[in-house]
Length: 204
Ligand SMILES: Cc1cc2nc3c(=O)[nH]c(=O)nc-3n(C[C@H](O)[C@H](O)[C@H](O)COP(=O)(O)O)c2cc1C
Image (tube, rainbow, N blue to C red; front, side):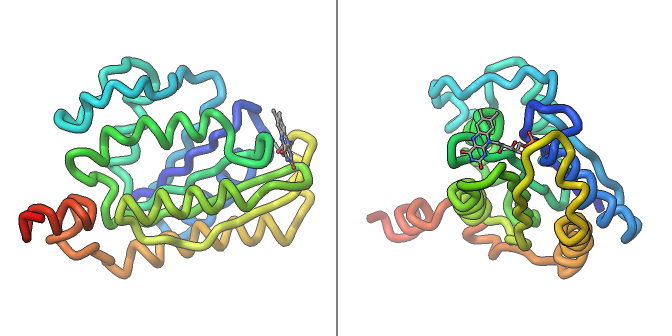
């Protein structure tokens, strides 16, 4: 089993990275493989909307996202971590979200994986990002774990918050337990959206 943590903050050693790392430590304590991917210093371009991936399942943009696709597909659980920028997720988080259109179409390659969320704001605006990641988890036919949210401003300051750090660690453990349940999205729906399924089944 492998749990991947995506830290979508460009700030090295920041609060998002700190909490995602702690969650991964929680998962590791359950004896599974873990990996942290931080966007810091990485080249992740925004989606250009070409939509060729809808039929090919391949994103033509050659950058570090190609590595992220591979890591996501190989994982059993993914923790989506983002700082809050202007009341929502970071641009890097949104770029990752959009680029994964290519592993959702034509096949839902994230289906049945477990998804957890971590969001950190200085003081306000957590819910937009958390809501959007949960919707992402749902439409990718993943199984939702809990979310962890925190308020912290200075680099790595969140590590002083014992409650949040312990909550992040528990999220990691919970991810492993959820993967262990062997959840499978019903196969007839797993690889496409519900409306596409209905269109094909009933011809309407
Ligand atoms: C461009 C930018 C926009 C921000 N917007 C918000 C915001 O809307 N609400 C908020 O509470 N904090 C905001 N912050 C503060 C960050 O959310 C906060 O410092 C957080 O801890 C950063 O996480 P990191 O250390 O993982 O990068 C913003 C920071 C930056 C750089």
